[in-house]
Length: 462
Image 1 (tube, helix red, strand yellow):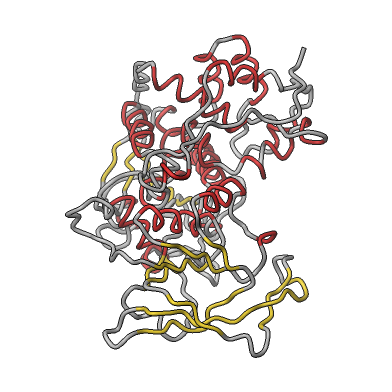
Image 2 (image 1 turned 90 degrees about the horizontal axis):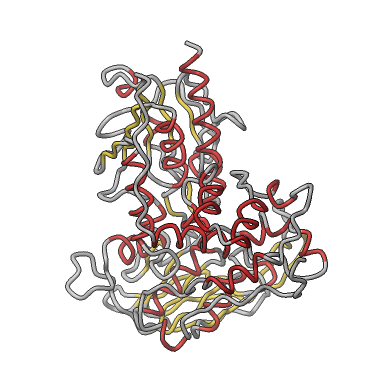
């Protein structure tokens, strides 16, 4: 009989008072008893609507059923059939808007905690120190993957399992893309990412770091001089956006990309770091997405009083509800219906305040959300020592500008066929944020998997 308790079993977490003093993982994970009780809430629906909500089509009821039976390794292997990064996805995927959104239990009660159960199965597997998978026999074909973020890793893993010689080219000095430079340790421990990458390398995937495709080597050169039969571009969207308001060039103004890269990848929070962040007492984070929450919570852990400035209301925040709740628990202040119009500086060129206008919501804009409209006469200053702009990102134009015949959108995204990732350049495929703009880890992985299948078909049909 299913467990008909109406609510999810709570996720154990560090207390807010403790976690603002460290970068250790906030969510501590289910234990065995809790995981099995939560798994018993699944109704094992015949139509499995939750699977349709998963971009990589994880066999969700099947793995949950195995957790109930106590077969944790079987549960993990079921997930791993379609998901190359289960320990990652169990932590950072927005399940509430994907698989859990379609859970039948959610019609009347809370949906089954699918993400928490996925994390439990992956962590249980990883704790066993299982042997790495054997390297498949080579099929004699070479494929290059640009970018080692979620889409690139998913594509590389699927191709390696099919016997391709895959080389992943990464611009930074460490593989993982946004998983290592963008998502903080307290949400996604870097050891987990490293383990997933180790598994791919055991399959034969080669990773070349410090290689900027479009500058060190071009896509054209990969396909001619280096002999790769196809290229997958999963280079992400790492070019930060700004507001174009006065004062954005002052000292103490960061893009969220720079700030998070320094903290997460270059260990700016560690004394003696080569890339320190100027510690500030009062920090404003402008934006309301997951990146804004990550930046705000990192700044809080560095000792700052943090204010999130967002031009709409809490109801319109695009960030995950869990991340917003954690931020509020950690003492981060939210100034809703507030929009900066200028960053003010002191005589030494450092930030001293942001000048803002109060907003009200008008008619819906193209996104369907009500458009913020400034209230006349509402100008006011918020004293600040630093400002972090978390306003979204766009793809770097380097690959676009150095690849012959590659068509892109006006805003910079590569034009790729839905379902295959095929671009206008023969043999070149693309997926993830390089195509869609900033999106989720699991959507990027889904695009990488689709492209891998299309690349396989392309090469085998030649």
